[in-house]
Length: 53
Image (tube, rainbow, N blue to C red; front, side, top):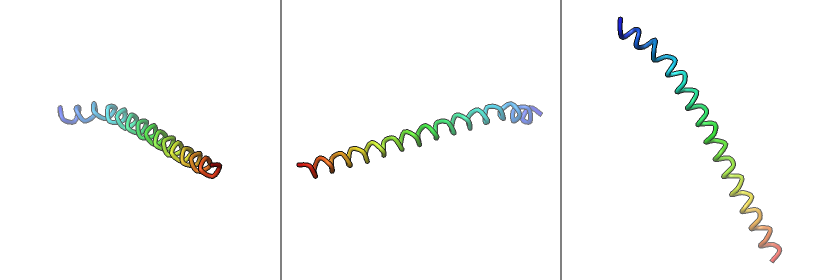
């Protein structure tokens, strides 16, 4: 019976962990998108500078 109670206690924890993982995943994705945008912007600026020289 203790195993059943233990499993029931673990469920809210599992839910919380899933929320944390989802949040971290979303933040990581946003960070990577920002990095890619920065790289693109830097490359674009460098090409424009090159054209003007």
